[in-house]
Amino acid sequence: MPKKLTSLLSILTLFFFSNLAFASESSEGEQTHGGAVDTQEEITAYIKHHLQDSHDFTLFTLGESGKHIGFPLPVILWDDGLHVFMSSKFHHGTTVAESKGNHYAIYHGKIYRTNAEGELNFDEHHHPTNVRPLDISITKNVVGMLFAGFLLIYLFGSLAKSYTKKSIPTGVGRVLEPLVIYVRDEMARPNIGDKYYERYMPFLLTAFFYIWILNLLGLTPLGFNVTGNIAVTVCLALFTFIIVQFSGKKDYWKHIFWMPGVPIPMKIILMPIEILGMLTKPFALLIRLFANITAGHFVVMSLIALSITMKATFGPVAATGMSLALALFITVIELLVAFLQAYIFTMLSALFIGMAVEEHDHH
Amino acid sequence: MYNLIGAGLIVIGGGIGLGQIGGKAMEGIARQPEAAGKIQTAMIIIGALLEGLAFGALILGK
Image 1 (cartoon, one colour):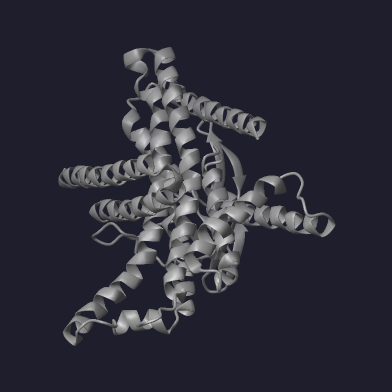
Image 2: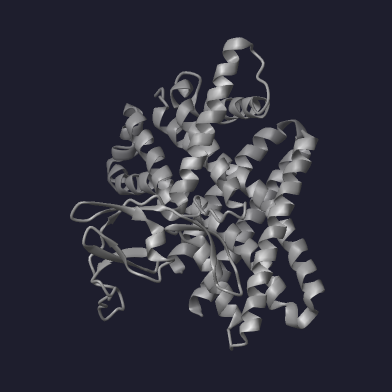
């Protein structure tokens, strides 16, 4: 285990260095351009761009030529029919893509239908009024989710298969088995109860490992920010919400709509409060995961950017050293946060399910 | 400007809350080291609930 940990740490350090190299590369590029570029604004735009989803997979940008190194992803649109083409047609949002007679342009990460020149019409709030087709593209986040999904299927498929041969798993399974048992014995069983916990194990395990892997994936310089995307966390929390509502026993609904043991006026007052509580539970789940991961990414990127912003004050060596030390420190904390957020999401899901299936014995 | 002040207030409130939770949990663990695991779990859950509240306020204020 310590050996694995050190190799993990060294990989992370390597990733960090590569990130730093790209960052300083682009800053040098700005300087050779010689124009009055606002570094602060540039960095803010860079971080904001990283936090968003995108239609192509850009690994890094060469500073001098502004060339994007990466690969295009398929764009799938439902407009007046199915339109499928590669995002390289957009040339990183600079040109109009043509597909079956329709023209599309990207504006602020969203695809709009335009004319052949790519003109966009704006209303008074500066929002485009062009038609937005239904966008079901394989974006960068979708690639991340698919990767995590297939990784889970592969890892746990091989783990399950290894049990048919002998009762002790080998390889990665040795790390996964204690975690599976941890989820079962520390989260599911105490919170849901011995009677029902088995039914919810698949969901809890999937949520736990899926969130954990995606959180860890976000710490690599591939630029994934999947669990820091509010649409993803909304979906995850929606699963918990639906499962809780469908596993709610008679007592659960009774406690929401007609609280036992209190006077009638109180029952009426408590009903809207309980309904609100029913909705705020998954809301807190989704906001917590989203905000934690976004904040983590933001802090790491800002600390890396320190090497650029502090260069004038402290000199390149001191600025890079400081940014390296701080960013490494935060990245190690983020490793803990990645696990903790997966833990908390699963733990609270188990807790909410446990509250729903609980059967009270009234005296 | 005002939302920055609001964010500062949220962080102060959240900090007080987390300090209370963490401090009391440590007291509890010091008194009963054998219950450390249970106290820790409860601490993390309460901490997470508090965090959800603070983050919710931060996002709404943005």
